[in-house]
Image (cartoon, rainbow, N blue to C red; front, side, top):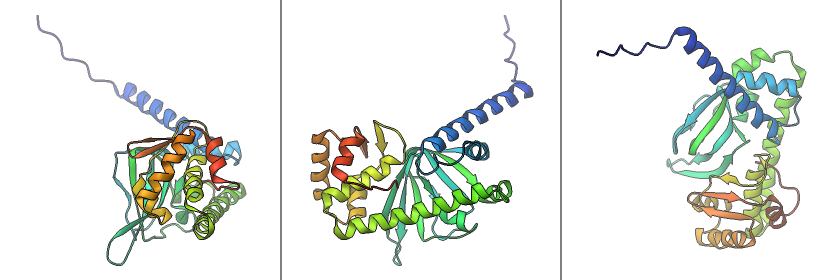
Amino acid sequence: MVQSAARPRSDASSSTSMRRDGLMDNRRIRIVLGRSPHTGSMPGELLDRLARLGRVEQYGDGELIYAAWRPMHRFWMILSGGLRVSVLSSDGSARTIAVLGEGSYYAVGALAKDGISAKSEVHSLGDTRLAVFDVLQLELEFSSDKGFEQCRRLLIYQRVWAIADLYGDLLDAPLQRRLARRLLGQALSAGRDPDIELWVTQTDLAAMLGASRSRVNTELRRLEANGAIRLGYRKIVVQSLALLRDAAGADVVPI
C-alpha cells in the first residue's frame, strides 16, 4: 500500500503560527519590561506599545552582538542569559567592564542619538534571548509622545548614575562589599527573587573589580557559605536578595 505524501501546511496555517509566535514574543517582552526596575515604573500603555515593537532574537554562547565602532541603530533588552561588555584598547586587547543580565539593557547611547558608535564590543553569555528594538522605528512611533521622551531620559540617567555608583565603589569600598554590590546590582535588574542566574565568571569579576581571581574566589565562597549565592559553572545563582543586600550595604543601583 502506497502512503500518500504528507500535505504541506497551508499558507493560512503558517500565518496563524507566525501570529501566535509573535504574540508569545510580545508577552515575553511585556513581562520583562514590567518587571525590570529600569522600565517597570513607566505607564502600562507605553510598555504595551514598546512590547509590540520589539522582536525576540536568540543567541548561543559567545556570539557577537555589537562590534566596536559600528553605528548603533538598535536597542537591546535582555530577556534571559546575559551580555558581556568589553572595551577594546589600542593594541586590540579587550577588558570586561560590565556583565548585564535579565531585565537590563544595552546601547542607551543609541537612544540619545541614532547611529552613535562606541569602542566597546558585546557578546552573549550562555543561551541568550534579547528583545531588539529598532531606534528609528521607536522615533517614528513615539515622535510626539512626551511620556516616551521622559522614559528615554530616565534610561540614560540610570546608566550614568550606575556608572558613577560603580566608580565610587572602586574608590572606597573593600573588595567584599564591591563584589556583593556588583552582584546585587545585576540581580536587581531581573525584578524578581529568588534563583536569579547571573552569567558572570570569576575572571570577569576579577577584571571588573580590579582584584585577583583568587581573592574574588575567596569572597564568593564566603557569600556562598552565608546562603546568599550558589556557585555554578560560569554562572552564579542568587538564592537570597536579602542576604546579598546585607553584604552589599545600602543604595545599590540596578545595573
